[in-house]
Length: 274
Image 1 (cartoon, helix red, strand yellow):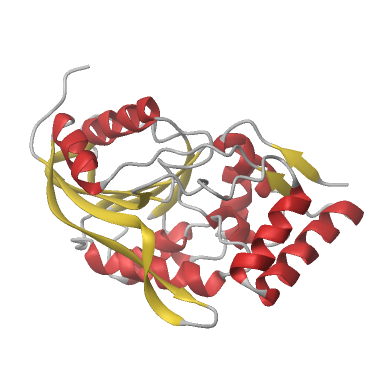
Image 2: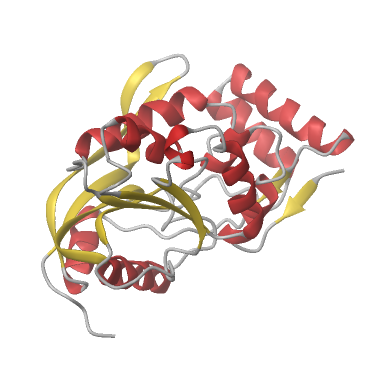
């Protein structure tokens, strides 16, 4: 049996690194199409050129780094670095990317670190990306503050931070089933339909009879209405360039805006003293 009860976001993704499906590291079970869609939307917002140094914190399976290489970042002038919080994820993604020419050229590398402690030098990056991470399982306002301070530290003055999929409200309100997998499955059936229910039921069954991991995550996350989050970002030396509702593609309803999640493009305007 491969059912894991995780205490925090790091434990969630340590367990997910054991999955046969590398897309599990994106947090979008069974939706590689959604991962491609979201990642291309992020890339379209980034000011990339051949000498860009890009840091993707919580890089999943490295797709954004691959797309950035396709956009023309030069291995002799730029760098593309993915940051992951566990050795298990780092090893898995490095192996996944072995055949990528951008890895062989040294342009792409995957390193161990977190949003609060990347391990990178001061003023290192031209662009930092952190999508669907700082709000995640078990995260708090203090964690978000520490992450913003770290992004400020590693970015060059005037450079850009993309923060994506930050909820404006508690997404567990009214649907917190605790650690009950059965309760969660019934919630999926009622609110997401039969196809989603069958997909999740299959996921649970594979965990019960085999080694495919199923993770029970903490029912707590960081959320912030856009006005409050922009005020918070200003406290950490960032000004907003734009913010907008996150856009997704749904399996049966096409493209649409998220009801709760927002994307932010920010610029570093001042350093923050620790």
